[in-house]
Every structure is written in structure tokens, then in C-alpha cells.
Amino acid sequence: MISCPQCQTANPAGTEFCEGCGGRLSAPGRPPTDQGCPYCGTIGQAGDQFCYGCGRPLEDASGSTDDPIAPAPTHSTDTTPSAGAGAATTLLDRTPSPTPSTPTPAGPIQARLLVQGPEGEQRIEFQGQDLLCGRRDTRTRVFPDLELDDSAASRRHLMLFQEDGRLWAQDLESGNGTIRNSTLMPPGEPQELRDGDVFKIGRRYVLKLRIE
Amino acid sequence: MFLITAHQNPFLQLGRNTMQAVLSVNVAADLAVGPAPLALGIALDRSGSMDGAKINAARAGAVKVVGALDESMAFLVVAFNDSARIIYGPAMGTHENKQRAIQALAGVYAGNGTCMSTALNMVVDQFGADTSRAKRILFLTDGKNEGERRPVLDGAVRRCAAAGISINAWGVGTDWDADELRHLADATGGQADIIPTPQRIEATFAAAFQEMRKTALTDVRLDLWTPNGVTIRTIQQVYPNIVPLTAGGDPANSHIHNIRIGALAAGDQRDYLLDLAIPVYAPGQQFLMVRPSVTYTIAGSVAQEEKSARSGWIFAEWSPDSAQAAQLDPQVAHYTHQEALADNIRAGQEALTQGDNERATQLLGKALVLSESTGNTQMTDLLHGIVTRDGNGTMRLNQGADAVARKTLAINVGRTSRLK
Picture 1 (cartoon, chains in turn orange, yellow):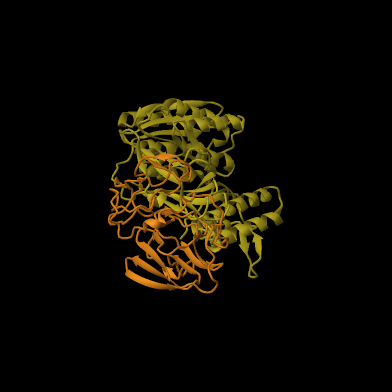
Picture 2 (spheres, rainbow over the protein chains, first blue to last red):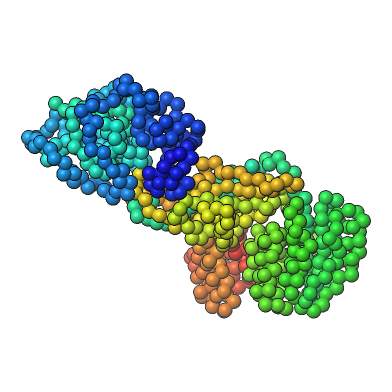
């Protein structure tokens, strides 16, 4: 059974839209099959590296730890956020959560994003500028800094930015969410970044952060 | 067998709790299903005003249709004035039965008043329980239903609708009430139109019967699944004509709302405009708001269900992009204009009846502009008979417009065109 994150209705495995509220339970454009995610039942597609219902690696269903993009153990202790499906935070609401943090000197922070996707690997130098990750859409004039060629990614999916001398990431209330270090990011709520953070977006992209 | 297509802009402004969509239901043109067996009731007005050429032509028209029946068809001939009388039937369309019916028709004479409900009730009594056939009434009158109160007629029409009997209502001459005949047709999934002169009854009946013979699917019903919190505020058929509908509930499943479509032939199309009240959700997630399916019966078989492909599903997704959310779907816009067109014609005709020529000119002129701009050529032609545009573009009432032109417009007031 799949529990709807919106209304908690229990739906049979393979259901694409919740029978209670109509909310999407599985990936857009993918026909229902009997091959659901072993963790949450979300319907996947052949070749998917991880489920984008719950974000867990599909190849790692047995619980093995040989996932090449698994986060370092030191980051697995992050506080688990609430799903916050009804969060009203908007793109402009960037107030970082009051997470205790070591003060960092002002000025640009040197960081690097290693992006693994269908095009292979690419490196993006990130110096604290706003960096929008999402799906390019000329019709609605969305031209992200990091373009994600993945129908499961939203047009405005994830924003990385610097504020108060620290680096932050904010899931822009994306349709299918962003997985940070195996945990679903709370929609619209900025989280402070750490060296080694790993983000999974859609079904094709993995972003690793290295802070100098 | 069916192709259902949803036309909509699924993107909604943040906080918006209503949406509109058009559902197009198409029957495959190459449907490999033979004609459904027919049960035909012929209901002829034999009130006093029909005396003379009209009753003679009505008899001739009925004889023409009876002669064209085949042995698979059941038929019933009824004539009505203050009360209804079975002229012949119910019987199968054998050679002997047809000859007897034609002989019986020769004895139909006109006299007394008009109580339409009596004829409709008689057909329901005879054919209502037959679930194996497409049931139709070929109804002819020349006047208003003056012998009984409107609720009595409405009750008989409801019985027809409940029994799945659709009415082809014809008004001969110009003394009938367009609203009454439209109601007979609209409430039962039938048609209504004018026969301007008695001489055209025979040919009109023959053509109408040929159309009825094409019926392939009966008891067609559109089922609409909606999730919790979604209400169908209004639903109306918007093609081929505008008919306000009420979605019935399914006692077995509170998520299902059904619309009776009636009988359909290969290639038929019905479009529906839905106005939904919906819950408000956070942006970024797609919601399924309506998932249609169709149930139907093919002759001699049990009812079958066909679920719509994704093309017929209605979605909603709240978007912070106000430009994206503001886009109006062309089909929704088209049928909204057709609705405005029908409203203007109705109000214009009412003003005309009340002698308010200035208001009638204004409303019917506006209707003409709308029909021209939306490509409704049939309504444009009809309106050109009532209003004209002079060299300066000023609308004027056509002083030469006769009663036939006005009545033809009145009975066709809700006729719509497809978006080209």
C-alpha cells in the first residue's frame, strides 16, 4: 500500500494518483506497473537509479551500502525535517532556519558542485552566487543556472545561495522534492550546507558539494 | 470505442479554488458495431388546429416511416389531443403489421385540445421496460401544450428520460412553443427543430428516421470520478447544443457522478463544460481532479465500461507563475462565448416579443458579432435573417423577417459549433 503524503489515504501499490485527494503519487508520464519501489511502492521506470517518491536508491533496496553516491556517515545525523506539504514558504522567503552554526567570515565562499547526470559529470564553481537548479522551459522563460534534463525535476527546483556568510540550499517547493543526504528536504525551508552534502533531484541527477 | 479529451489549463493561481474544463466525448467513426435494434414511438398531434393540410401531411409522414421499418424494429403509433390513443402497436415491423398500421393511420382525424404528456406517457408505458433497444419518439405538434399545466408535461418528460427514451420533437408551422419543444429534446438527449410547412413533414420524418437507424450504442452514461473535496458546481453539454445538466450521484461510490448521454452513433461527439469547486493545495504537486469513464450497451449485451485514457483526465497544479495560470484554454473560451451567444439570442428574442426593438437590436446584433467571431455559421445564417448590418456597420432589425425565421432561430438557440 502507498500512503498519500497529502491526505494519508492508503492506496494500492501501483496507484498513480491518490484515490482520496487526487494528488500524484508517482512520477509524471509513467504508466502504472507492478514494479513499485520496495520501500514506498512508488512506481518507477526501468533504469531508475533511485525512487523519487521516497528518494531511496533502487539499486540499494537490499540495504547494501555500496551506493557510489551514498552520503558520508558524518552527515546522516542531520535532523529529519517534517514533510511540510502545506508549507506556504515562497521563493522570496529565504529566512534561514535558526540552526546553530559556527560563524563564518564574510565574503564569497569557495565551493564546487560535482553534478552527475545523463550527460556525464560536470563541475560547477559555486562562489556564493544564487544558483538555480531546475528544468529549462522556454515557454515560461525559466532558464536555470544548472539545467536538469529530467521530467521529474521542477522548473524551479532547488536554489543554492550565500547569506550571512554561510551557504544555504532551499527546495523551491518542487513537485517531487529534493533528497539531501537521504532525507527529503522540507519544501521552501532553507537549510545550511555542509561540505560533502549530496542532493538527489528527479531520477537522473546527483549533486555533490565540496566547500573549500 | 470512445476517445475522451480534456481541454483545460491545469495551472492555477495560488489559492484558487475553482476551475473550468471541457470534456470532449467522441465515438470512433469506424465503430465496428451494427445498428442497435430500435423501438420507435410515433406521436402525432391530432388537436383541432392540425385539421386540414397538417393532419394529412402528418399521416403521410407517419406512413412513410412505418413503411421504412424492418422486421427487427418494434413500433407504436400514438395520436393525441386531450388524451392519447394507440393507433397501432406495439408491434414488430413485419409487412402485415405495417399494412395494418397504415390502414389505422387513415382513420386519424383532428379535433379538440393539446395534452402532450398523454402521448409521452403512453409510449413510456409500452416501451419503458424494454432494455434491449434504442428507444425513440418521433413527436409532431403544431401548437402549444395548452390543455394541461407545465408540470404535467415535465413529469412525462422525466419519465421518458428515466426510461432512456429520447424525443425528436418537431414543430410544424410557427404556432408552437420553442421552449416546450426544446425541453422535450434537451431533457431526453434528443433533438428539436422546425418544419416550416406541412408539405415538408414527410421528407423531414424520413430523414429523421434514417438518422435514428444509425444508433449503435444505447444507455450511454458518462461517469466522472472526483477526489475528496471536489464538487461539480455546474456541468452542461455545450456541443452540439447547450443543455444544462445535473450530475447524479452513485449510491455505491460517493466519488462518482454520472451524466446520462443516451444513445450514440458512430462518429458522434458530445462536449461538456465543467465548473469545479476544488480544495487548495500547495504549488508544485499535480492533482487529478476528474477521471472520466463511459458505460454503454451494445444490442443484446450487458452494460460495459470503458475507462478514459490519460487524455481525458482533468488535472490541477497551483503555480506561482501568474502568467502561466492566467492562460485560458481555447476550448473553454470558445464554449463560454457560445454560452454568451445563446444568452444574447434568448434575451433578444424576449425583447422582440415585448416590442422593445431597440434592446432586441442591441442584443441580437451582439449575438451576430459573437456567432461570426466564433465561426458558428449556422447561427450566423439564422441571425442574418433577423438583424442586418448597414454600410456603416450599424445593426438594424430586418423588417422583412417573418415568423418562420424567428421561430427557426428560437428553436435553434442553443446550437453550438466546434472550435475550428
